[in-house]
Image (cartoon, rainbow, N blue to C red; front, top):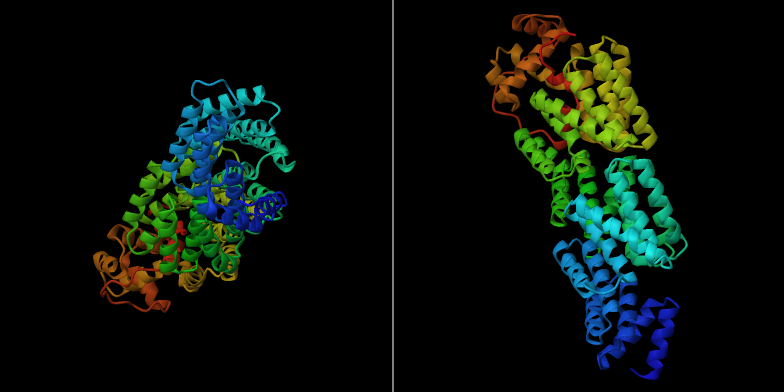
Length: 570
């Protein structure tokens, strides 16, 4: 490299002019090998410009150069940085390999600062990748000791607090954990922790908020991440990460058009750099598309999430149910639960309750709701508490325990409003209408249905809005599905013929008929048919099975516990 190129590249790098620094360094690299210090500058410039693949290739060359020069501690630091980059990208095997190299380079040597960086990555890997709490605890303890020994490195103190905070939260001390995480951010905000490591800290905390279903806290931490990342570089990887998290929050808030327009491209840009967040983005996009009735689009988004290592449950299972395969949906949900840690299970458990109630498998629904109660108790927070209340209310409605269900739903709706989770709020209004109707408060039930319908329409949840509008128009307080069953029964169809026509099980037909008799105040099939004739319900002759309902339509049916309740009076 000529002296002019050397001066230009180093001055541009010092000024943060990454494009100029990269151009000068790559010109020099074409003429001959760069020295280690300039390889480090080139890798940094490429990273800030968002070219993760080139940056990681340069970082590997830098690792080899340092190793050849006998700079073992610097080589170990490069190896652990590569481990963190590959871990973020979602390639756990390569990440583990680089972490192993760093450890081997440090084996048998006196403690050094780099060991704290190794311990931090090891902690995250053990806690998140292989779910080994004991190994994570050992890494956390090692990190705390190294932070105390090398207290002149603010990053190590930050790492120790992050590890302690995440460990406390994973053990159920959520408030204590966040107190530690708040303290950990002080050196980050002060600019005392490198950008790669700071970004990982932000990601870890925002991910924890998402697992806890605490949208208020997630919103606060995403705000902080955006304030930190946005001034640094428009190509900065963590600017994109923060944007995906913002779009996830907008999905909960009901800004679905913005999510549909932007979340796919944002996730695509992150695919090679931060596969975890990209996969979570695609999963959220799939959920929005499913609720809008775009089954094919939802399937595509869920497939992309799965390809990036993110299990797209429970949404993918609800698509199976929508295709007329609720048993397959339940199998998929159980498979997801079998591979999940306790806190992770809370994502799928509400769907298990919905699908199980729809299938009439009330023991399974009760078990899932009870487990969700346990998770909410173990990890206190408003989001999980509201999810547990809603799941419990579905089971209580199926058991015709109207008063207790109403109490749970009243608490859930307050939380969902505070969390600005609009679709969940609409669901709770719809469930509340079912509870009120069961208590005979039909005017209040109609008002709750109208509220739910208005929210569904405002969100763009067309299939839910159409379903609820049809149900509201059904006579006698019947749901849309009950009206269909009554129409078939009024034609003289047997339970088997009704089941074949509506593509449901004979057991479900029996439950619907029991609900119909109860709502209409009749005791026989003949009396129900007479009531249908007197109230303008046209008989429907049995015929070939109707097409499978849409995803959103089926999801809506599963939100209506009285539709699947057993023949039991209050």
